[in-house]
Image (cartoon, rainbow, N blue to C red; front, side):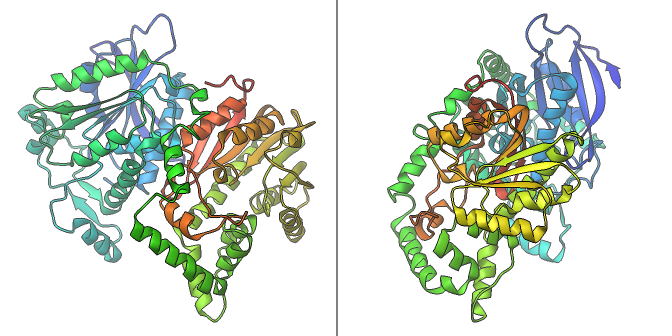
Length: 597
């Protein structure tokens, strides 16, 4: 639906589907006089918590980008979008909705992420920062106004109290204590806020707590973000604290970043009595973003030696992370693992084959606790419920879903060829292929260890898989492993492999071989581990499949995507797992290797 606008745009009201099928409402402002040359560009606005996209109209006018598009949507549970007011299935769903919206803008209006600047306020700013961190979109820039990394709840022990209360009332809602006059010095804006029937005053306690948890993670790992960022902080903010905003800014790896503290300003920085400073900084930043090309894929080639994650990994290898007390505690845990670990079936497998081995992963996938003397099963249950293993199981589900979608989309009368270069027990592939017993599918399963292939062969027999299976012992990092495979496969899979190796040159060589083996237009499914909350503990207590300390360098999503682009494939989708620890992505073979960027 198009709506005539008195200024330089034509308003459009429409909807888009989130990844779970929920249809959300959005507004678009189409320029009446678009630029005569160059690609279409856009600002994407995210409203504050409680609010809706209708309040963005005046921001579009103030930014005054008359040749550019503007977009804003109502977050689920807000405005005209469905859902309980102030609620959503999870905070991660809100982030996923933003990813779906930007992809909708690309498919419907032809505007690529690299021609978009996101402008986000308060809770919307945390949604946007999480999206940039987890999904690594190649947007041109991000403006974060009064980012709600830490909401001032004022009541002592408010968060523990909310967690306790939710045990008795899971659907608990919290009504905002903020009065309109605490948001802005402008009487007119305060009145407009108070009288707006679409503004929801309550928020789900679940979303509030998940917001706090996610914000803490993103602030701690802000170094993974390298898109240009402008942060606007209010000096008299009654709603959010400034300290985490400053910490986030200082940790950013963005080559272009600016922090502006707005004087005599309340939380609603874009709706203040005087917005001149905020708008001047914002409009100058947007100009700078559109005049600065995005980082090329080649930027990430040396990230294993010259980046924040490389420095953290070097410190881990030198055993410099943490404190003397924490290192002593990990040493005690390691000794306890040697004594009590054999009682747990899962720990016993890890101690024998390595906690990152195919045997360990297959056991984690099965998720059936077992052990000796009764106590072993209890220990094993705790082991299997560790956040990393929960993430691994979610990763399996997401990988299988992505693989199943690609199999289903393949023409039914054409043979389908799948390559898995480090298959382990091949459980995720074989269980998925089992669902397509009537299809002509040829699967090549490779691994460096013969005993993994033997386990995969046995699983295929147990599942009675009818697909044509070829089991090959190969080194996924050897160039010769891909000789003669050029253009053979429709789908290639690499799961849980590159996360174990810090060296980007190794990963690039492997990726180039994998992408060469794909036909033009073929798909690559790959996993990544952008971060992990227990790196020091794992390095201090667990062993890998080579018998050494399991020391990992998380590879930020932007870096992993850059390496894939350098190999000649372009990412088209990413699924995020538990707490953002693991991701599963889909890329399509396109330009020749080295042309990405």
